[in-house]
Length: 392
Image 1: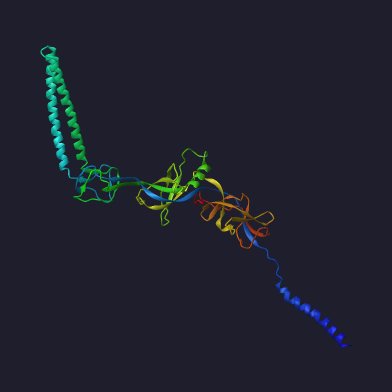
Image 2: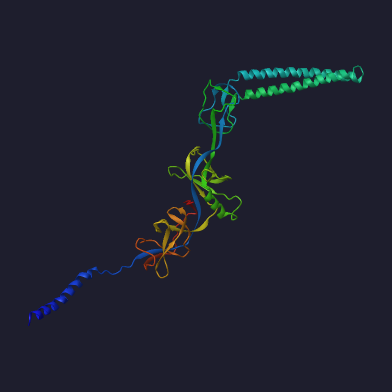
């Protein structure tokens, strides 16, 4: 056997071994495609009453700034600061000495005028009798009658002076214009008060009920009004609840009372006002709260959990669904109000859609999956009144 033929036989023997070695090296890299398991839920309507959350500020139901109506020196303060006062209760006493003197003078002038009236009336009646007997002239009688009428007018003038003097005297007692809690006194004994001064001397606030003033986007308000137009009573009762700044829920429920008739041009908002009971006076004027305004009626909504909503790089929300062949269908959606940890879906989904709940990062549109569990009744919302955040 020649050298060339020997080499050829050696190569033929080594070739199968080389192929076998290659086969052994590539075999572990071949992995079977694993099926993805998911859970789904069948979408159904949830019936509840949406509630929009808005920032609000507490305003007193009634608030009166007490000012003096006359000029004088404060003689005494007759109320305890921070206490409850009744309407008409005396809060301050102004020194009445000069005003009492004016009343006494006016009263004396009135008595003088009354005496003159009586005398001139008697004289007029006497001339009337003499005129009947033709013992006096008509001119003398007319003069007597004129004198009497002047005396009568003088009485009216003096009576008005006395009434005015008594009114000013009554103003020396500065009274509470309304019932409520009286605030700090801005003056002390000996202070000079002037008629028509701009500074108030105390305030009286009525807080058995309080107002909540809120600001709502004019666009959002228009949409709500449009949605419920011609479908409700003329003035439905709209409940309003509040949460304090620390997250504590207030235990009383109020109702919407008033909606402003125009939009604030600088902010593009509409002012809403609600009234809420405040029996223990825990809500103070000026406090900031979170208000929850319920929509006029309960309605059916499609709701999905926030955890199953995926977003594209541009922020477009979508939801993965499973069709009858267990293939993934990615559906873009239009979201509405935020309801707790869920979204109201305005567009993109229908009742009966099977929504994928898990393994969202492993699936894609058109992929066939294995559905392990398919819930028929999601019941994402169970409360009749549900607090929401308005996206608009």
